[in-house]
Image 1 (cartoon, rainbow, N blue to C red):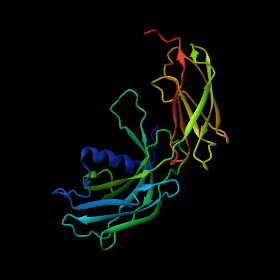
Image 2 (cartoon, rainbow, N blue to C red; image 1 turned 60 degrees about the vertical axis):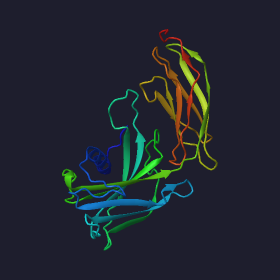
Image 3 (cartoon, rainbow, N blue to C red; image 1 turned 45 degrees about the vertical axis):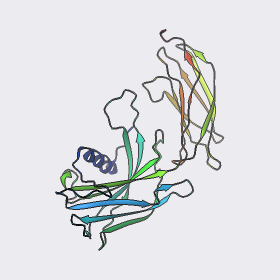
Image 4 (tube, one colour; image 1 turned 180 degrees about the vertical axis):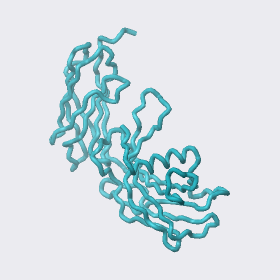
Length: 267
């Protein structure tokens, strides 16, 4: 379920080009390569956030190869919420997909520094948080000619902010533990979130087959209750319940259901 938008191009392009070595991304302790004209660094304070304190200050520097400050350099900064790609087949695809948002394009001062204060490390769209990763990236990109199609003059850096999530739970009841092809399986239950967090809108997913991320989904009510029903097929072999709260700072829950499909071939 990749989210594609204009800002996504920066995040996805940077990740791809960095992987193949076309972008320069020296670490804090690494020396620039012989052909590098600049060194770009980015960091945050603090390096981790919690539900009660979700904001950080983003700072960075651009220096020339000889270590002197590079003033008046525009740096494109993004916050990137990352998700684990659903891939039960082990295909050679990007294991992460991205949902970025622009934080701005600050210009370095006389000391080569740039700052974006009070950045909210959070999920700001209405998209699902199923498979979200708790590490949110802050990326910085300086493209000398401003053209992403000529990446040989691009400089990239990133840092990860750990969004410490609270745990949640899900309870359930199944209509039957042994099912066969054509049966309707009903799962009722309740999601429980940390005190003070509203469970209404929490997504609940039911998987019945190993290749599909989920077969049916619903959202919890104000009290956290939910009902899911699915018609069983002859190949359903994986009965798993997953939840995705709407808050980045609340982790989802997962339960393996005690359901056996008697229509599956023996052995």
